[in-house]
Length: 481
Image (cartoon, rainbow, N blue to C red; front, side, top):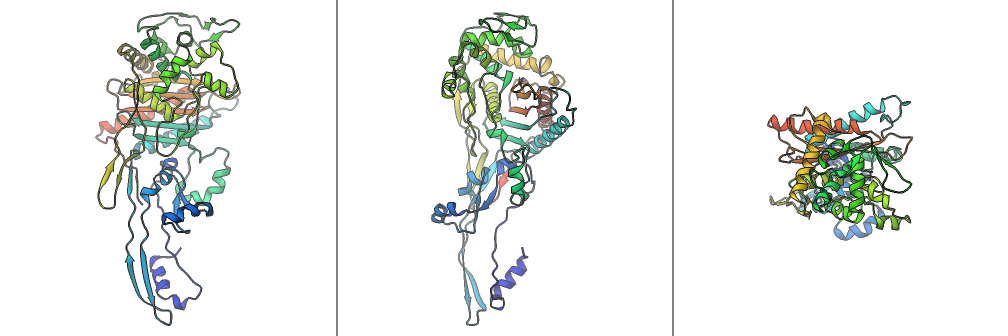
């Protein structure tokens, strides 16, 4: 690399430097090298196979293009048009005139919904949580010392705008090209965006959605206690399903707050998987949420999936699916979208990262919220589930929030996939419970439940502390062309 002055000297005296050529190449500068790296994405050179198509769009072989994230998805907006300079030389090869014959047209500016402060805080807190877990004794079972990854997604519940999407491990955008070989071979897969492409068992976070279906369909009501929990569920022949507690006769509100498996085994059996999935699709589970930069669908357990993978669907699978087991695998952004739907009484917005696109001429196109689905839920169901999730945060499985200065509706989840590894920790919530603003989902792969809830609380504490200090989060994620 050379300075601009050196560049101009060589260019203007090119006759004195035979065989020497200089070329100006735009370079992307990153103010915060790791913040939002998976979302912002990377740029790189045009490969030969890409050039065959791109040359017809005005690209030159030595141009750079977006390779991932917003850089790739919004390439057509971010990219401007090259200008043309005409250089006149005398017979000796000295430049005698240089003028711009076609001015360049700058690309548009893409403004993101992403909140810089929240995104940075989420990444910092997740790094801290995972470091603490990995420092725990390795000879203790299920203590989270073997945590493998983490994800946080926070959404604006009234628009579906993504305020936070964090994935651990992450990477440094400013050294991406130089370190690519190391990154691609890293066993922790830092380039993999787990928030959008990682599919995880959701555990008991499934229960609020099943409860909404059960009440709306008239199988239970807010006060009914249809079954007594005595740690075991023995409805199915030669099969016993278990609960971690002895809850006795328990209402749906307490079943959510205390995460009673037996209550939901029975409700899942009565609902059946087809009816549960009808509601789950409304919640956005096992569905793409609409985000611009790509995502995976995950897996919605059921007869169709079982058939596709060559398995049988057994009656007991209705019960295990109701507590988030069976084949259910959802992405963190789907879980956040689900929490948003709970907050909105059944209304789910399409998730999006782009807030607006500002043209070089000063015009701005604002992205309007788009409703993806509306579930018809009974008022009784909505109130019961909200009460259960609030109780979970005050005195139940998410009681770390008991002293919070804001109200939160929350549900924890634990998923055991391999006995030799720690459980996954899963958490969903929305807040404030009485007038929701944000929905959050946190997943720590093999990180266990309590640290996952603690991580979510640290992020929500920051959100509400910022508001009380008059620093309400504002989208600051701007990409300049």
